[in-house]
Amino acid sequence: MATSESGLPIRPVYGPDDLAGFDPATKLGEPGHYPFTRGVYPTMYTGRPWTMRQYAGFGNAKESNERYHELVDAGTGGLSVAFDLPTQMGYDSDDPMAAGEVGKVGVAIDSIEDMRTLFGGLPLDQVSTSMTINAPAAVLLLLYQLVAAEEGVDGPKLTGTIQNDVLKEYIARGTYIFPPKASLRLTADIFGYCREELPRWNTISISGYHMAEAGATPAQEIAFTLANAKEYLRAAQSAGLGVDDVGPRLSFFFVARTTLLEEVAKFRAARRVWARIVKEEFGSTNPKSQMLRFHTQTAGVQLTAQQPEVNLVRVALQALGAVLGGTQSLHTNSYDEAIALPSTKAARLALRTQQVLAFETDVTTTVDPFAGSYLVESLTDDLEGEIVHLIQAVDDRGGAVAAIEQGFQKDEIEGSAYQVAQEIDDGERVVVGVNRFTVDEVEHYEPLRVDPAIEVQQREALQRLRGRRDADAVDRALEALRKAAAGTDNVLHPLRAALAAQATVGEVCNALRDVWGTYTPPDRL
Image (cartoon, rainbow, N blue to C red):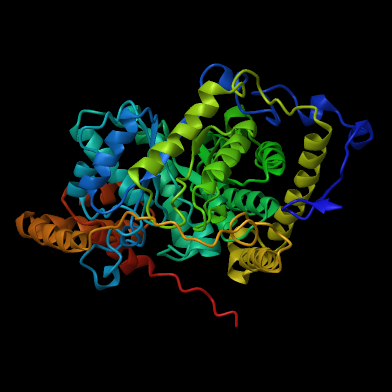
């Protein structure tokens, strides 16, 4: 018998007996209503399609700005910003830790000047901006708010998302700065600040995507993400915020694999489990808190450097699974991302993939077309059971942070990743172009390369900035930030003041490091 990516059995044929005792009123409800299995909005895509995002950002802010203008002109309704590793880790481009990494995997942002360049000429009151940034999420959000204000766009008009999910960094990615408790305090401060200053902003995008890319099964991806979300809600409650104060602004970020049927079931199960958690465990009375609103990105880990054009097919199938599963926004990977940063042509083709789905197929004509499917409803129930089991395993270890410190989630994911790697090596799992249907000749491909001069340019710009700003004002602002971090005040207010005084990303992060320290993972060997 075949098994799903989560190790659940898939029978050759499904029929009425597989849904014996199935109660549609309880399990499904109506679209836009609890438990939201059929989607978070009553009309879903029948009124308008999902938000089409493209993840972009490389080199310096000027080059990235040019790409954003191309994407907006091509019909992108939402921007998704990639930052380079030094920015993600809270280091300036001239820090020794940044050497060789400036502008490599995203755009380098060192100060408010870079942010002005990055978003220059873009209609910030009309586009939704998602920023993939975690440990220094507050810093980049405040820079965005400051630049928008200079353009006459007030905070209540801004829409977008900061990823701001540092717990998954300890599990899967590693771009953390502060210890978990300090990180949760900063997250709660962001919740409180945005409630007053940026009411339409999604304050966190709780991510299963990176865990999936590290090897998590669909069930692990959802379970560990929702367990992290529970930890964030508890942190908000500790800061005096109610579940319905922050719940409506939570969003999630998941992967879409080529296993289309399981992915559809995964998204449906995830909505149902989250609605029940928020309502029953946290006492939410606001349906908007109970909605699992999520962004989806197609699976980068499934792209291959061999025969890269085949990735166009993979991405189209992954995108279709996300749409049929009810995503609110979608990023489609470019076919050449397994080789290098995407070329302009490849990024445009990725966007066109979404546009074909939205405007040339019939998938937007009805809500939840798989409802009542013997297979999908059965698989949704099976996945729900496995997700609940894994969340309970996290809770039994004291919650997400305690389980992270014990290495539970990381061990589970690494075990799944190892199994997949073995199956590929043994030929049990077919990867077209890699272990079957290969070709002897290698086609020439010229990847997009980042100019190494960008690092020099960023260093020189920082030197000029520090030479002309009011150094005493910066020092006073940084000291005020340290004082707030050492106490209980919301740190975002002094943080904004420091950035407005032209303190750099690295300087404000170092000020917080002075107070909170940095995280060193436990040695489990």
